[in-house]
Amino acid sequence: MQFGGLKGPSTTHALVSLICGAVIMVRGGRGSVSALSFDFAEAFDRVHYNTLLAKLKYRQLPHCLVR
Image (cartoon, rainbow, N blue to C red; front, side):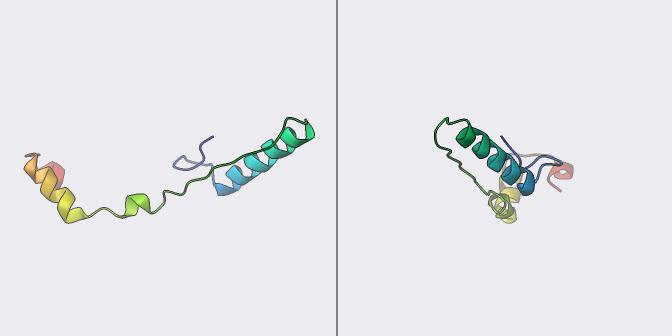
């Protein structure tokens, strides 16, 4: 399930969903529970804008779009 990048869902929703799923699995005797979580929050905050602008100009995009 995806909770990030969507309007409404939050980390609280993700945690509640994980716990509910784990309880259902364990009570049902269906084995173990595994979870994997990624936080990409800063991944998109690290754009080198001068490089990006240079690449856009190199591609000859109209100035009004680059601006």
